[in-house]
Image (cartoon, rainbow, N blue to C red; front, side, top):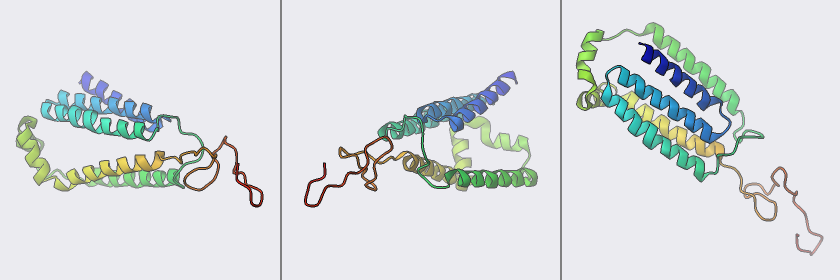
Length: 195
């Protein structure tokens, strides 16, 4: 019980670091801590297959993919300046309120379709065959929703960290506007060449 509480607290701390970190690499490391803590929670519940899958798939493959995206887009610098997507904070707050409301409705209206002992027996100790059968029959829609959520997270991370590339003449590719801290666009005299 103490290990379960400790791992749960570590998972929450990692989640807070993931959300609050201003550096994308630090946020990814917080996510590693959360995923490893969740794997420990699975192991403490005697679901060894789920713990192994959590480490191999999420802490391994998915996080390496996130780190490749972060490094590819040179997003390891702290975020400063204006948000690249307008109203992103307001939309995130609205989404959080809707999600919290949906979770509250589910929590207060949920009825277990079968007793806990029968559900535990159906999973037969968390073996691969039993978990796969349950995921791909009874929980197929949530399983596919999680895969779409991961895809949206990757596309969102690319959209949020994509920055205009400064050119040698001080202009950006996107708008022809000088980046902060760079020389503004200089116009050439009539018939002249821009410097």
